[in-house]
Length: 609
Image 1 (cartoon, rainbow, N blue to C red):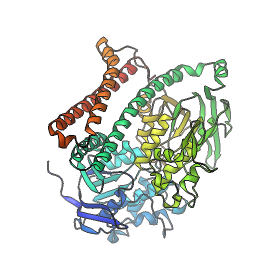
Image 2 (cartoon, rainbow, N blue to C red):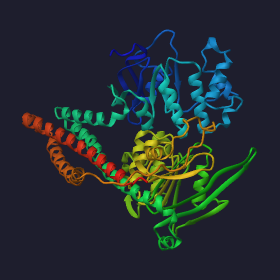
Image 3 (cartoon, one colour):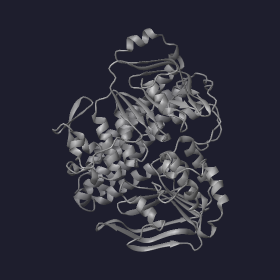
């Protein structure tokens, strides 16, 4: 099938910042019906490239084409409300000049995104500001939409509503986002901005990691024909992906076991007597809430936030908290952590709790301080992490910093680097319970990966408020869902498990709307059973096979690391490269099969409750 005719396109485009090429020779096109995502490392130039397409940044070389008469709408990461007295005026500015008097279209869009036009833009919350910017993008009925981080500060119902809107959009769409689930659901093509150039895959983001690994493997093989420096760099890239995959497999196994344990406690644990909790109070029991209720008086009458909610959270549990904006997620966290008294019921906390808190607003950094001083405020060069001293330079590398930045001032860091520094400081503080309130807002994908890695290794208890579905699926053992009417129910597993276990609810709507409450009666448990003899035997044998393949891959990678192998023995180089590819494919297949069988075993045994 031939690609659609381009509405906007770049040909041979280059942009240079401070004498250094950001990217060179970029060819890119977006046509009607396209749904493409633009991905790349932090600082690779994704937002700049999108601004070139939008006509907001001039290219140093190459041509920018826009089909005559076409409308291109751009959604920036941070909307600028300067000069607009009301939300209505701001959204109306998105209308083409000849159509500025069509106020009814503005009213229709404002109703669509559930915002009042008379509001002062300066008073909007993060989510409201994002919906106002989306309204301005939509009101001009564009042929192409260029969206830079459209899900930032949106709650889950609004993100799901936006997905439906964009899936129905018939024009061209180009997305930048850190939200993996959002990209996977929407994109049909992937544009990868990598080392100054662009790569294209005709598959969506769901296949990106697999494609990325294939590209790095091919690049590494080609690099053997070049110099040692490139070989070393490519080896580092490949080992990073391999190590991350191995580490993630271990975490998947551990997380599935934790979810099974949590499911049993959710099903039967509510009836546990206090004698058990007292025995655990010295360390294992963290939070016990029984029949908690909370309501507030508003101008429209009492608003019920929580009614009759009970839970027991033990050391090592990772609990996600979800719900529309305004449903009371932060209020529930304050009740569970003893910062706010409930109107009814009781909350008991374990002893010796040391809590670290990551607020949506992000505690500020002194722009004049150095990274060294931020991490070692009392001097020296050691950081205490999980009770163990770490040299500050080595700890920095864990958070993707170059050791040469150690004495750089905070003001020299990019936004993504500042977020990583905040996380590094947070995790350097001793804690056994961590509360993260919307930690993924404004994080680039590299920092999001890093946060997931660090939390995956965290040994304490985690309470996580997030709108990132993929992030929740990868981390939490259970999900507490607030439906907005006071109903609060805990489900075993992550966001996907929550969708499976809850009864069908009304389609997602913007957060300011009043969505129909979801039914909270848990789905009936599936009959218990077990794997067939053949499947159980395969499941038992797969870990040993994966370990064996991993060892073989390590030997082959060690052989390929020889920079002279290709020159000395091209046939052996090719044979080793082919064997490495085969073993890596076999390992990926074995890992996928293990996950499939383990999930089937858990389902048959009723582990998901």
